[in-house]
Image 1 (cartoon, rainbow, N blue to C red):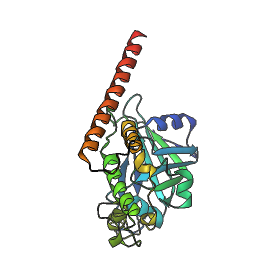
Image 2: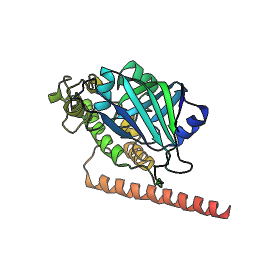
Image 3: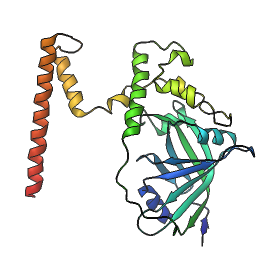
Image 4: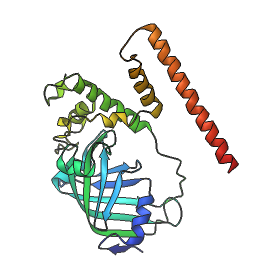
Length: 271
């Protein structure tokens, strides 16, 4: 038998924060409109402010149904399932608000150094009712890890925008001014309206890219190699001898890193 609460019970908060995946459901007001259910799940995107308010970082997808529906009527339900341990289903019923990438409200929650590649909006939800039920029909599933495909692809899209921005080839907020393999172009071509014609993203494409969203995806070895290369005057040169020197330098750095890891591994084993 299901139970209902006016806010998120304390015992649910810690449980929700451990979940690796959740779903959001929204719908347009039109009787002919399409009801939408979207899976969300990358680690660190869902946040609980308090028992009455939550938010999640909305990552770019092939559609924009949730954002469009929230703009029109604000209704949203968030669903969590237990796939291990005691069975449980929890639904957060509430009103959602959209704050696009680049707006003051977005930046307050997600400054550039915290924003994930591909992030397009923050969805804030005022929780009006919480429903829990048994979840006996939900099977057990073993969590193996999150896919890294999304961030790899999104980083390439962000990099295309950043390159065009640094080369000063973006002259306007028009779609033709953005690189076709960039995120800003994708916002306008795929995320500007829902499948029912409701308004989607409106300003995210106008926001310049911050360098650190790309830099933080690089490995420490890559940053170290680049830094040393610049100090030795080998950056930006096509001279073969310098390129070979840089490769030798990278190999040396890799060897040092592996040796350090090897040493640490034996230290752990001795403990």
